[in-house]
Image (cartoon, rainbow, N blue to C red; front, top):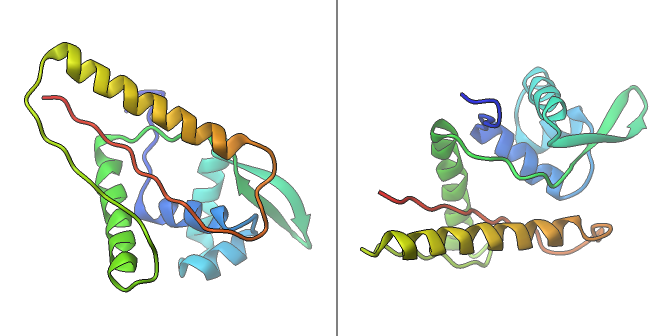
Length: 153
């Protein structure tokens, strides 16, 4: 794995999902995700070290964490876990517990057009990240999960 790559598994995705609902302590994240406190603490330490979460407060003896909004570049291995997390979302859609849209496009095109599509996805990812960085998050409101992916063979 290169220096800019960071392996993220399904458990870490669950942590991001829980943190998107608001800042939380490790025990609260363990409760929210159903994962052992020790595993959550280890994952939070890794995320903190790489700048994906930050300490924003202290509650008793526990730090309070929130996500920084920094994009996590997926590795080939973490892509599998992202798909598992996406499956959870599809299950929520099927049960009427979420609203969303998904699409897939497969096309044969030129290298130039493939690069243009890639640039559009990078631009959209940046625009979504900008929204995440704008001011304070509201206490209430919908939770939005966005997955970006592109493969050029």
